[in-house]
Image 1: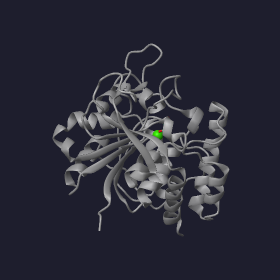
Image 2: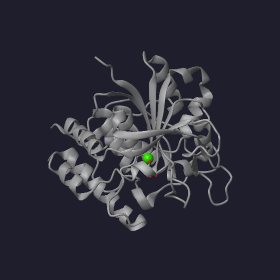
Image 3: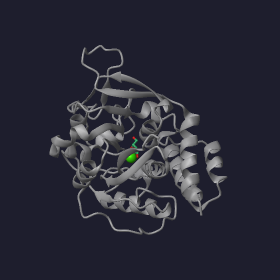
Image 4: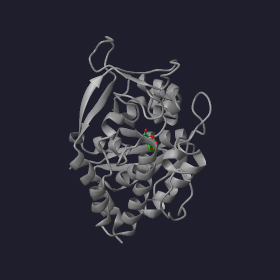
Amino acid sequence: MTLPTPIILDCDPGHDDAMAILLAAANPAVELLGITTVSGNGSLEKVTYNALRMCAVANIVVPIAKGANDPLAGKASAAPTIHGATALDGAELPEPTFEISQLSAVELIAKLVSECDRKVTLIPTGPLTNIAMFLQAHPELHDRIEHISFMGGSTERGNWTPYAEFNIWADPEAADIVMRSGLPLIMSGLNITHQALATPEILDRISALDTKLARTVVDLLQFFATTYREVFGMPDPPVHDPVALAIVIDASVARLVSAPVAIELHGELTRGATAVDLYGTTGQAANVDVAMELDVEKFWNMMIDALKVLGKE
Ligand code: BDR
Ligand code: CA
């Protein structure tokens, strides 16, 4: 029997991060060792509270630790136009049922990685600040990391500026450290996550589960749909973050290509852009497996199975 892949989810919930938490806790191919939070979609306080509330709604109990308040350079911003004032608007969520860890995110990641009997995969779905800090603080643990599968960037254009995707834009220096780490990296950028759309048919399938959790998820995704329509004119919202995890659960959910990826740190109009060299024009060595196409049916089956498992009342 294959043992589940041990994972740590580093996130900034956020509607799609919330979906990643549910998938991480429910899918038997992975073992969720812990959750760490980073300021991104909302302040560190808000996103940590949201992680705790998502755990409460789905009866998940794992260590949760707070990470970085601000990016490596500059000050944090948030994304209330997309995720609302709480960073997770749209549903009634219960109060937390347990306390967060006394450790910082970097300390918790280091502890979980050192204690695990197998290599651990990190799944960052927010700005890469905590992951960069962990890599810098713990070079001795690099060989204990199996993969870093992150949501961020794009092979195409951005969503927060014309060229930058939000997570990379929010902390380009951290993203640069991760891209140069030499560790096995998997990038799920907008080019693939925009295929993971929560269409009305998907919402109907979730509603049909007819559990409290399913109703909460539909409320959240309906809020997300409204802001995506208003801000981006997209008819259905892309559920970005669980894509980075789905690939770890089942690699056949996406087609990956190896390519050199670099982060633009200085461009006046392009800071935070991911320069993905799909045609080998830079002559640089490939450092990232870049996710290109999603098996949409497989992805949503995985997500809905997770809701079934966690929604049992
Ligand atoms: C990313 O930005 C956040 O708003 C989402 O949670 C996702 O991680 C998409 O650009
Ligand atoms: Ca996120």
